[in-house]
Amino acid sequence: METPPPSSTFLLLLLLSIFLITPPPLTSAAAGPGPSCRSFCGNITVDYPFALHDGCGHPGFRDLLFCINSVLMFHIASGSYRVLDIDYPYRSLTLHDPHLSTCDDVVLSPTPLANGFVLDPSRSPYFSPSPDNVFMLIGCSPTSPLFQGFPGKHLPCRNVSGMGCEEYYGCEGWSKLGSHRRGSDSGSYGSSPPECCAVSFEAIKAINLTRLECQGYSSAYTLAPLRVDGPAAWSYGIRVKYSVQGSEEFCRACEATGGSCGFGSDGERQLCMCPGFNSTSNCDKGSIGEWALGLGLALFVRVGQTL
Image (tube, rainbow, N blue to C red; front, side, top):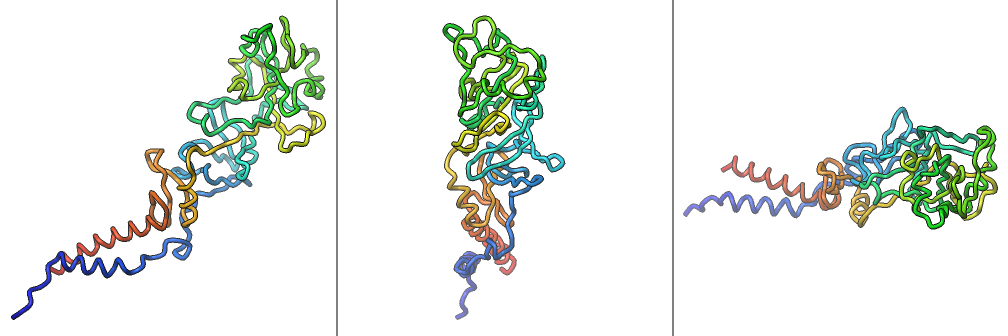
């Protein structure tokens, strides 16, 4: 008696069982380099959570950095700033505003030329100027919101990390301006506020020169607990701290398996970008899942052709 041919379902299950116990192809370094989201702009490395390529990095950091003629630019609501440095271990950026006043030059204009520093709501959870960064607002009107709402017209001006306007007044840039109304960094100001008022970003939440009715500003920061002598030796620029909201376990697992962290077309879903495919977990798990799915489809077609 002749044995009937096995059914297509039996053959499919048999072949699938054989192939599934065979190790899948390697998708880590042994299979060639994966798609890297790390890039460079001039001498600055751009890596997670930042990115220059679409789909790379953290979704909260997209459309933030641009490389223009090998110059890295940081764009937020108040304008564009040149990026001087990204410190990944300390999670901070150093920014330069071309119209920022320094010790050598105090830049004032009835219509502010400088950007100040204003974050839109979508960026605020991720960025904030460092607590050691002082903003010195210059040439502000007596009617400025900066001087309103304080009992006895008490100034909100305060030194930040040992830096303030009293020392800043000693800079050479002030002598180029001629006469100006100097005042105390603290106390009451009467009808004429000082030419310079030092504040922290946390105190007013936004350095909007137009809204604050100021003609210019300076910004300086410290990198060490040691106080630098004199404003001529201060580091001028804006030191911004960044943070990644939520757990970073996904990205660590992705990078540990040879992938690069990115996000999906919806701008929210995190993806692990692996060699030849994307995964919603990591390159090891994603590679097995996609390999098995592709194998199953191939077997189904092959069995169907032979029956």
